[in-house]
Image (tube, rainbow, N blue to C red; front, side, top):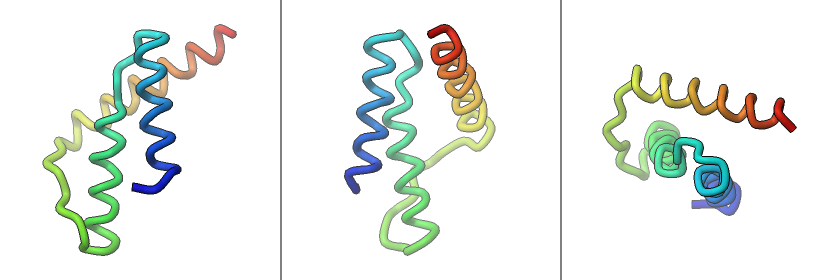
Amino acid sequence: MTANHRARQEAAHSLHREHGMDDVSELLGDLNETRKSESYGDAVAPELDAEETVSRIGAYVEAVEALVGGQ
């Protein structure tokens, strides 16, 4: 995992701890593994439900927008 992906996961975990947002750090890791699997074939893609993933990402984006908009 590159530093960029690790930093994104750490940021997501911090938002969870500090603001009670959904902890999507594991989901970010799963999405990165899926990307590597599809792009390079050097990783095993985790089982992800497309509808659940889209729903979680949408809810997370809305929560971040609310947090940023409330500053």
